[in-house]
Image 1 (cartoon, rainbow, N blue to C red):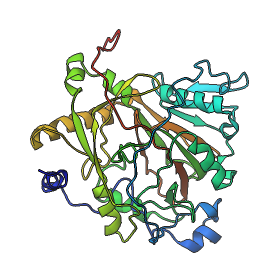
Image 2 (cartoon, one colour):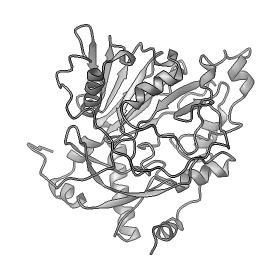
Image 3 (cartoon, helix red, strand yellow):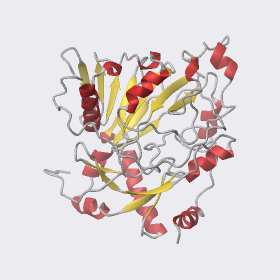
Image 4 (cartoon, rainbow, N blue to C red):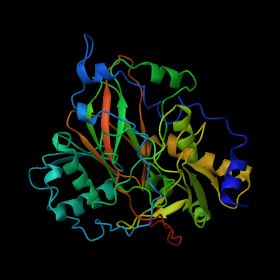
Length: 387
């Protein structure tokens, strides 16, 4: 049976998409008040970076992505980090396994050696929060030039982008907007939506950058989960059983949701098969690679190849719950002004938190370099595993 037909069969019993519930909140033309964002009003100041406000251009149409050879810069990087973590740099680990907050280095000014070390440290610590950065103040093309060192830019099929720069993915909740969160929470008990970005692509992202423009006074944090540690917590027998399994990741539902709310689709949606356990090319670490997205509606990971529906659903539910409940291998990152968060999308999942209801703006930009096609290496028992 053709993959498209099989995917259609697998979705028949799933609740149809409500476009206001997909991922964290609805987005698209008409979801914010343009005058308030550009000029402000008596309650809210204008957007700090109006040239980064989202636009959705229906004329932007792109052909299918072609495979490309990715260069993983972390492979030969100096693990002493002399060009990244100099004597004036302060690095505080958020947890033992995942996450570090770093001050005292301007990543936009890194040499190529420093960028290589950034790629490696991100792979090792999974997520890094760099404080006091100038990223938001750079001309957009300079920010893109920096990000392009780490891989080919991904153009999101449906998200808002600054006018003329479709390579930038924007995360935006406009000033005065409490409706989108209320709509979401009218149907769900939580705003948590664990996901890795665009894993339906043949070559999903690797080293990824997210930088802040405006934020609520408190709230709107981002939580990350360590998929390497999630894999390590499984028993050796379970780890071994997962090897050799592949799952289908689909972008079809995301495109359908965008169309349903009258927004754009820049490129026809695709599905791809990826291993459930992937190996990182720089560290050699194995990580779970399943993507809950909105677990109750349409996850990017649709089903396990070769398994019957009930078997696939049961195993994926276990893995999704394991990822979501693993507070002891998660890190919550609080946004500060001029923060750039860098994470490795190959070995993490993340979720935004919609926990503020005062109408304050939350506005960020993501640069999303693609990486290698996920691959699996033969099973080996994790050394000195004590779990």
